[in-house]
Image (cartoon, rainbow, N blue to C red):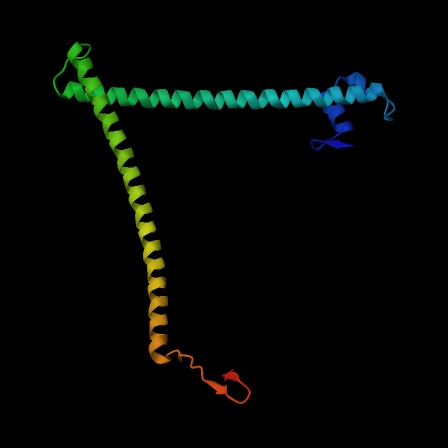
Length: 173
């Protein structure tokens, strides 16, 4: 029997207590089944714990990278305000940094708005192209219909009827 890519014996040899190896029988008894299931459960729990630890480590590294990037941005704002003549740790310097933050935020929002406008313009252009294609096909069908009228006019049906006075009947063809 194979579960998760390993056999019973592999599982027992690698992950279970040595007393399990002393079991000289592998017929399906409740005791043997319980031992095997316990072994598989323990292995699954270890695997889950390892995945959670890896996820936490990854999440922590991403958080640290984000903090470092924010600190770099803040240092850049501070340097800009210092270059304007503001002294560090003053209200004017703090106000300068806040104003720079608002400008950056406004620029980011403006960029997002511009991207949205470009996307909408592209969508409208595509709709206009589709409409032109549709109108072109309708126009070509109308032209074809009009030209067929000139090249082969549709004959108007004529009906001729005769009255037979002897039989008192009318025949039309």
